[in-house]
Image 1 (tube, one colour):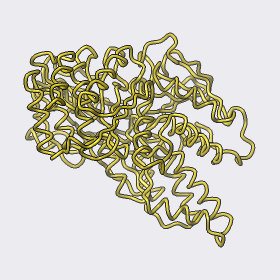
Image 2 (cartoon, helix red, strand yellow):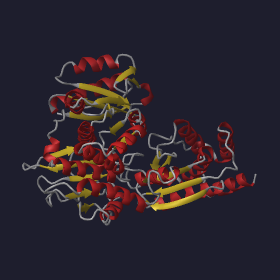
Image 3 (cartoon, one colour):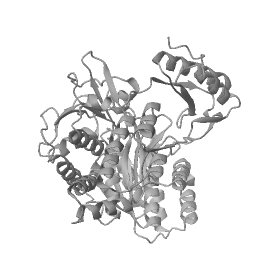
Image 4 (cartoon, rainbow, N blue to C red):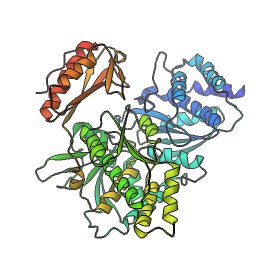
Length: 545
């Protein structure tokens, strides 16, 4: 077939280094940009096949999110803006690792297994972040799409959530919104203005926010968005990419892991600040108190604020809809207790990885999911959307019920339901703080985080660790879970779990307890147990004190 000749010819321009093996992980392929040219070409091929199979537009995003600037990566986006299905993650790995001479065989194997009609039209949307390697690598994706006769639309520089949004808009024939960046700004800004316009006595301080753009694509896009907000939110933008390096000592991941403010931001006492990550799908908030103490409000605090707001609106609207918060084992125990005991909200725990949280959140009328790292969003079922819309239009409902329904309706429009989105989440958080008249300090005191510590232990093979119960308990190696259980009993209000990294031969250890010293000691003792029972390499973990 002429089609496959074109694939072969173009693949010689994007040759695979012999013996290189890469895995499609929780967020696609990610490694040093120099090793990714053949991967990008092949993901262009795979996205075209996926489009033919689903008879829908597929997205390909070139980004490595919070990784260093020299890295890059790629992820595929399915028709409703969600992550690609597990079976196709397998095909991605298969296609990526086929040696040059086996590429056509691997391609034909996927076509046969999925019974793909090669005469079906294919459409692929492509976006990229601001890394210096992204232009070259996104061109390789476009080459892959054209090699199989697919149509492509190159959106150029966009945030990852914007591309997810555009794919969903395209495949819902505009019911979700218009498949343009301008359409995205219009939908979100209109909802934000509607939500905040009648809030009484908003001061200039309440309308002002300092944003760390991680020297990435989010900085460019939040600047574009600001023009649509009609002065309802004034943003001081730091780390905007004009001088600093992407994700270097800045961004959401740096702030969360280091528990300190990013470099390059001017923080006044008590002032609200937030940080995006490199592709703007994560957000964390923080402030500095009068004693100079740094306070982080991470994904747990964000999920608590949002779910509390939504539960109150549902009660005021008299709507019987089931709301749940989806967390991972990394969620702080205090947040889980507050949600379950004080707010009487259902809390579900899933394995780490946004695709697991997203799937669990879809099981409820309203699902709020956030990883502790600040990646998350709100999902509304079709039933929930219909009931909210009916009440908002009902001429017989009283004013309070109607007002609450209208607030819920605009909250739906403000949420990017395809994926975690730093810009959308920022606007939603700012809305809630405005409506409730809350300062960042008041938000912070909803509950107090239990002190915690994360460590990692190098092992010869991470696969020796097998877990169950959403990664909260270890099945193997034998004796490790018993050791963790007995160590936890030594400390007050303590818990600890271990899980293998998804990308490197390390075991991640998480511990929390009543005091920081206890959390540190527990984390160290669990690390020693992992080192001794799971094949630790290098020096034995040293105490933290």
